Length: 343
Ligand SMILES: [Zn+2]
Image (cartoon, rainbow, N blue to C red; front, side):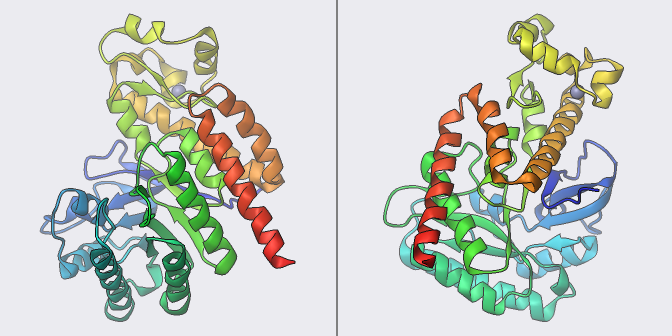
């Protein structure tokens, strides 16, 4: 039997789509339970990856307390969790960047030495240029007691741009991420979790193709709330929130064929609900995303070329095809330079 080489985490929160998650890999965030007297999940999770909420806090200018985050994480007792880190933000100066990374390193040590979570940690990686990328991976290799790195924020300090958990990646983001993932894979024995890269089946595939081991998706749910449904092998399409005709006219015959073949519980019972219920769309979207992740896993087991062939076809019908082309070039570029250096 084929064993899974990739991980794909479905994002839930304290208002879950589904209460029985005992067969799922779930990602949730400590920030959702930060103010609970008695933090606990309102659902059961097969495997739980509890993010620390630092990215949300940074983007909302909130200050998270170290001890409170530890308390929430220890109460919920996830399978994996991240020490409180300090993401880099657009426009930050170099001294602020270095200060944040220093505080992140301090917390990694604190979590390892002073909490019960030490064997469950995923270490956060931030970097601001090529040198810091290598140096920070080296530091983590030496001190972090984990086999998984979470790639949080990456900044190209010398030029404009960066990766801040962006939902719609740009070419520059792909450059930074490919460099980071390939450097980690080459210079360390860590596996890589790309934070929030499963917004759609397309970004999910980009993450796995560039060498990530794990990513997560809140997109299945956010898209559903905005009236979008995801079709197998084609990214996404819109379904009307209120008007079925609006939704249906957006679909080509090929789209409707793909949809009619969907085996999710919603489509098997009554696909019309997709046009009226966002929870139904979320359930459908999740099903499709999981299928795509499983397909990525199976194809990668046959080799990167087999996977590339599939992606060539998927992206040929997508507006993101330029990103696929770019990712492919970057991955190839890194492989060739690695080969040349290795000679
Ligand atoms: Zn379906």
